[in-house]
Image (cartoon, rainbow, N blue to C red; front, side, top):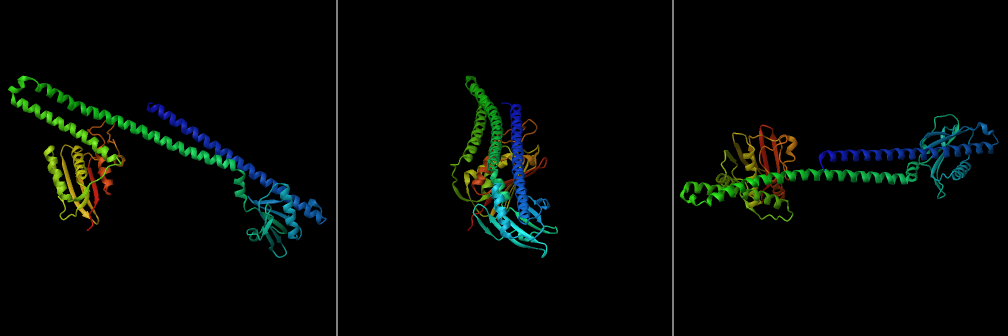
Length: 422
């Protein structure tokens, strides 16, 4: 499946889920508004009925009754023209609320304009037939002249969501599906990216293997010529070619094996006390014997404490960092290797004055198979395994590695390892 098809599928899937989420939000809001409106209408009608009954009991004209007013989402008031007995009001409210299937707990309070205060407040649970002092309405006054009583529903929001239970569950389900979809999409894109990187690695590795194999075949055929014995210098040249190409193949295999061992959870380090300066000197010596290097400078601090490390793997780590510094240097090779210690850590720095690494790639260079591209080309040969191996080994030593770099100004790789506390 090519990139264009995958991109189209991803875009369509995203728009589809956005549509589903938008519809869910729309219908949830509609259902919420409908339930709230129905509740408010029932409360207003019940309160108006209560007011009419109060006027009838007092043998007053019910046409003088003022309609109930909604102050907030769950607070209603009714104006009356005289004092009112709390027991009578409570019974009328319970009766009308039950008639309209309003079973929520409510608080009611009565305001007396003569004393300008709430004279009575109470909380009533219709379902449990319990009542207690009001906790809300006794502190609230309506800024109007005259007597009035107020009704407050403290559990309105909870009851509203309870009545919308199916919509709440469906919304949660949509959120879960959306998260799962986003995660699946992320995994698919990551797998596609990894597949492309692996394909690039295989192609690059295949190309690198073909060259030494072809050279070895040619050298072997030439050595099979009986006349070759008559030319010792030429014979030595072909033997040297076979050795060089054999070492090249060994290097390729070692790179893959190093990365495989570092990526394996079964890797066990054989730690021992290591003198870092001595190890760096040995690596430089061995490196110089195997490679034609440029200028490599040492700046090693004396008296550095020992570290507990696996000598084999730590040697490979330093070797990889030096090899990278040389590989990515410009025409003039200038690499400096430093060591020093601060507190409980020893630092090893490998600095070059090469091409440098842009910030967007610095976080990715330790990923498996990742190589810093330049346009659509990879100018310097590599397999994206060296720094991955370095990072894995450093992590297993409870150390850390980071890079400071600017394009065109070189790079500084800093390795920090814990010292052995005496």
